[in-house]
Amino acid sequence: MSAIAAAPRQIRLSRRIVSISGWALSGLCLAVLSVLMVWILSVVFVRGIGALNFKVLTTITQGSGGGLLNAIEGTLVLSGAALLLAVPFGVAAGIYSAEYRFSSWAITIRFLADVLVGVPSIVIGYFGYVALVQWLGWNFSLAAGAISLAIISLPYICRTTELALRQVSNDLRDAAYSLGANERRVIFGVCLPAALPSVLTGVLLALAVSVGETAPLLYTAGWSNFMWDGHLTHSPIAYLTYAIWTFINEPFASANALAYAAALLVTGFVLIINILARFVLERRRRRLRR
Image (spheres, rainbow, N blue to C red):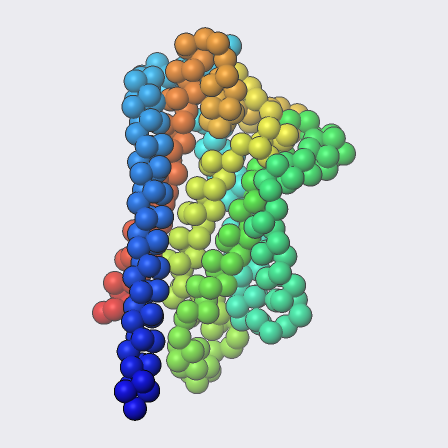
């Protein structure tokens, strides 16, 4: 009897040891990641803040010097155009996947979105180069770069929208149907407004991804030392990540300073977007708790 009674104690002790070891390993990984993140951000901030000044923000790039006004404008234009293309298709695909989740089309959309997330961005850039720059003859341009970024952003918006709509209570749907609302009114008048904060969070995260992309734009957007001329095709456009990728390898102090300033701006944009997304999501959670 004593051996039988001691067995549960040994099981509990072994489970406790495994649990403590797991938590310790998780804490160690978190500490390592936190140290690396703080180190990266501190290097970018210290070197970037020293290179950032009013001239950098108000003048265009001139060779390996000058400012980043053209790159800032190009980044905003490219990311904004990519969202204009990706949001309607991504939200529509997410709605269909959530409301008709067991249909063959919904399963296919979900599978393709998961596959597209795992495709390296440089592959999408190469596809954009072959299909848009060469085959359609657009050359390096805003349209080619924005479409490539939209393809990258599309699965994030799709899956976030689907998950947001799945979290909407079925009681809301049943109540709307009981009042005589049709399917379209239930989806767009009840479910989508209830899930809108989470959908917006996904859109903001997709925006953060597009702001930090480099590889697809190298093949599609090119680079320009001037401001965007308003043309959608046959006209390259500047962007901040190109300045980081190119100017950091230049043997000139002015070029290195532009690279660090561009890195600080990109990091700042991404942090602001992520903080805004967290704020929107937390505000929705507080409303649901009430």
